[in-house]
Amino acid sequence: MAGVVKSNIGHTQAAAGVAGVIKMVMALRHGVLPKTLHVDQPSSHVDWSAGAVELLTEPQPWTAGDTPRRAGVSSFGFSGTNAHAVIEQAPDSPETPVERVAPSIVPWVLSGKTATALRAQAEKLRPTAEDADPVDLAFSLATTRAALDHRAVVLGDLDAGLAALAEGTSSPNLVTGVATRGRTAFLFTGQGAQRVGMGRELYGEFPVFAEAFDAACELLHPRLREVIEGDAEELNQTEFAQAALFAVEVALFRLLESWGVRPDFLMGHSDR
Image (cartoon, rainbow, N blue to C red):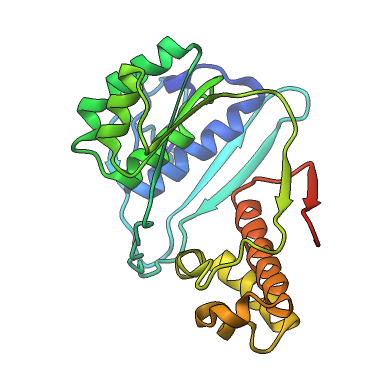
């Protein structure tokens, strides 16, 4: 069968090969050979009876047979773009269902060019947020919208946070601010901030945090995990307090790093 992508999107010049690859990958995925648009009958200047080539004037099913489905993609152009690629369907592989575990707390991020625009964005989002999947909504807000200067993050009660943002009032689960074009610094805290069970929720929810925490504990003290989990008296001793804080802070660093947050400066407080 013969078909061209030019009838769909026009003359793409040096990108013609890429467009053809995309078209054939989609054809393989959907099992359909798409028709060539804007042609009613094959050209009379070609002897279509010689050989086994037909012009696709209508879409046709493309089912798998005894051999894998294959397609040739040609890019005939100027300046060295002549090429021919053969694309073959991928081997069938059973789909393994992935169980999605929702995080215990989800941040919903919003932004606007001005404070007024940010409040309007919150008001606009309120009706749709009621029925939306919390994780899907948070993902879309964070990845599909521009990050403008006036920003807000809602945690916990989404409706209450959006209402407060839209009305310009404060709320315990709402953080607002204006982004600045500065650099980022991380500060490792010193002795005194330790508490029993610190990092427990992060350890159970984020494998990156758990891996870094385990590695630090193994290097620092054989009983460190045990002390952090349940011995306040020992945890307050310098031997364990400083090591425990360092292990948690390293794990926090690796977690933020896995999200693409890297500091320009790293500082230690007190005895760090």
